[in-house]
Each structure stands twice: as C-alpha cells, then as structure tokens.
Length: 403
Image 1: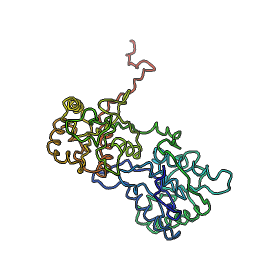
Image 2 (image 1 turned 180 degrees about the horizontal axis):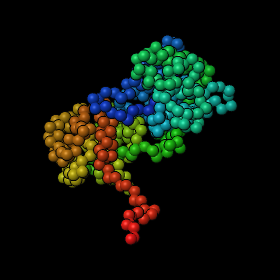
Image 3 (image 1 turned 135 degrees about the vertical axis):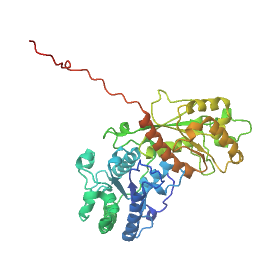
Image 4 (image 1 turned 30 degrees about the vertical axis):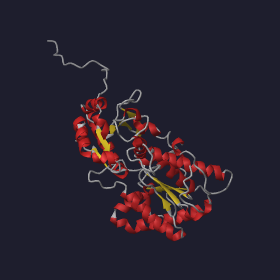
C-alpha cells in the first residue's frame, strides 16, 4: 500500500532506523527507549548537515498513534536510501526487526540483481556483541567500520552514551555514522520500490535461536459487544460482527479495531500476540500471560458480566478503553465504571490494570505496562515441576562389621 507520505525524491528518508524496543517497563513511567530516541535525533542532525536533505531519517516513533502502523513502516522501507540496523541481542528475536530486514533486502534484490553496488545496509552496535551472538549471514558484514572510536567497538552506542567519560567518542561515532550513511546511500543509489504487504512478510531471523518460537505468547482477550447483541439504543458506530472488531477509538481518520492495534504493539515488544474473545476463545488455548480488553458496556450484560466475574476469580490484567468523543460513553462514565468494578474488582486493582483509557495514545502507553505485569505475575505463579530422576544406583548404607 502506498500512502504517498514522502512525495518527491528529495523528501525520502536517508535512513530507516531498525531497532528492538526494550521489553523492560520502568515503574516510574520513564521511556525505556529514550537513549535510542536520543541517538536517532543526534544522527538526524548530523545526517541533515552532511546531506542537506530535509528528511534525514525515519524512526517508528514518528508514526502517529492509532494509524495503520504496518502501512507506515512499509512506506518508509520502500522509500529510504539506507537501512540502519541497531544491533543488540534482542534485535534477532524481534519479529518486527526480522520483517523490516526481510522487506528491505527484498527491495534491494529486486532492483540490484547483477549490479556491482554495495548493499545499502549498515549494521550499528547498540550493545557489545560477540561474533557468536550474530546470525551466520551477518558475521561477514562490517559492523565496526574504519574511523570509529575504539570505545564504540567495546561498548556500542548505548555504552558510550551512558558513560560520561566517552562523550567526545560518542559525538565522533555519530558523525562517522552520518558520513557512512551519506556515502552508502550515494554508492548504492537505491531507487524506491513497493512493499505490498508488511504483515505477510517472513521473519529474516526466524531460524536463528528459534525465531518466533523463542517469543513469549501473550493472549489478548476481547470482551465487547457485537452488532447483534448491543443494548437498546447503543451507537453501532464502534462495533463489528465479532468482539475483536470492536473499535472504541473510531473516528473519520482511524478505523483500526483495538485488538488489531494491541496485536501490533505486542509484536513490536517482541512477544507473540494471540487474539481471542470471551465468546470465541482460542482453539487449544495456551497457558500464557493474558491482558483482557474490556468494553465497559458489557459489564451491564447479564451473560457477559457473568463471564467476567468468573474470569475475575483468577484475576488478569485489564484495560478498559474509553473514548471521550463517544457521547454515550462519556455521559455514562461513572455508572459504567461502577459496573466494571463490580464484575472485575480483583483484576482492576492489579498493577498494570487501567480503566477509563480516554485516547489511543493513552492506550498505547498503558499496554506495555499491562503486558509486563502480566508476564511477571505469570512466572511468579506458574507451578514449578522439577524433573523426576530415577536413581542410577541403590542408596548406600552403613553396615557394622561382623564380629
């Protein structure tokens, strides 16, 4: 899908920053990826200076919350001149990083088959990596280019950013990287190329360390009304034929169901999302951390409310989207909060559970915390079954000598 975001050739991003988002969510709400964002901004400044172009780089933080995330990624991957991969151990287990890599290399191969041009891919070290930590295909790539300070090779960008004594080396490494981006873009001379379906792409690292098999399954269970069971007078605008089609933040510009958006965020965090609903649970459902996405109106429904009470007996993390622009929900907010609390009282007091989430941006901020808390509780409460080991010999006994 082409969104036409970048317009003419001069507005194409010089580089696409591909990185693995941190799975750690600080309790104080601090952005765990703030150092990646700083590196991106500093690099954009230097790339903008050395190239004179208005769009130095692309980072997924530039995508507006609630928009079609895969389409924006595909557009940037189809338009950028250089693919900059910020390498860390988490990079190779990230589904999104594997898809981004596959998408860009597919574009390169379709355009440069038989041409003697450098690959427009720059691996950069976020943290120190040993050769054994790299997939086989990457071991031959030069990820410590000439001219970079020795501290970069020893610590990666994260290390030289965090350690104050390496401040000058950090500035030098960023400037060298900006020059390398410009040089690589000019030598590769890569044209734009369509990337039709980002979601359908395979993970380039799927066979490395188990790929997706090594990711933590996260169940996203939707409890919402369907069009065929709405309460009398309830606006149909936000609902679909199934529970997962519920779109609480729908407006003229945003039509993504909340389960679909949550699925994207969870995959972006490096986990394996599994979407189901309380009326159609996943076939052979896995035992896994769960986040419940609740339409506040279902708490008044006798049947669905009963289902929620049963779920609350073994509480799970709950997120309750609430659209401030939905007049009916806004007018009934207090009553709805009371009824939600009546059926999910134990779940709502769990760390990470949130009700009255009034915007898609607030939902985006709350979901990683809910996922993290759900994972923590899952591993704390999961039963431990030590392996039963058959004795290989009889237990020795002490016998008194015969007189």
